[in-house]
Length: 201
Image 1 (cartoon, rainbow, N blue to C red):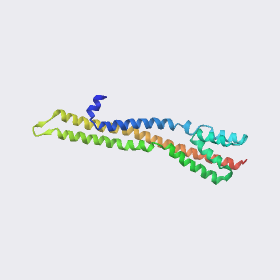
Image 2 (cartoon, helix red, strand yellow; image 1 turned 90 degrees about the vertical axis):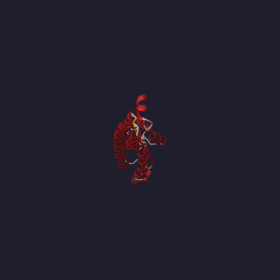
Image 3 (spheres, rainbow, N blue to C red; image 1 turned 45 degrees about the vertical axis):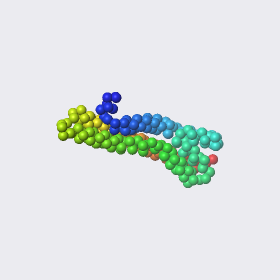
Image 4 (tube, rainbow, N blue to C red; image 1 turned 60 degrees about the vertical axis):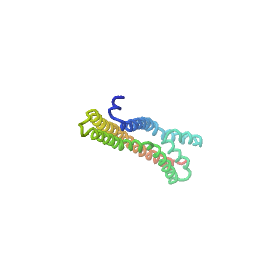
């Protein structure tokens, strides 16, 4: 590993930092965007069942709100149940926007790394090319400097692409997952509104 860093030159440190950040973001989003954490299975049915058998108390709504992002949206609708269908929908839409913002957290940073990593690699390539041209001298070519310049150029180009590909794949995957969660969350919210309006207490 140390020999690779020496061969790639000082520009590789930017790529190393970017790769560590990308791995940390991918792990964090993978854990945070698990389906069971965002959309617990059977949560809506459980809420509707509780409402049929007992009154929904503020304490129950607070517990529901901290249960999951879906619970937070459903709790906001139940808090506005007495204000009518439109007020319930508006409250859940407003909460849904805040939830969407939380679900999308760090995705822009991951996308930025995917876009910038090849440019960092290109920067390393330019540094390597400068060293290659610096190896040319009137008295002849310095083979050691020439070889180092070539290795700097090639290693940085390869590492930039190597970091960008998984970062972009992860970004697209998490972006699609968030969009899917938001659509399903909206559908479950509408089910809650329709159920409450059809069977008012």
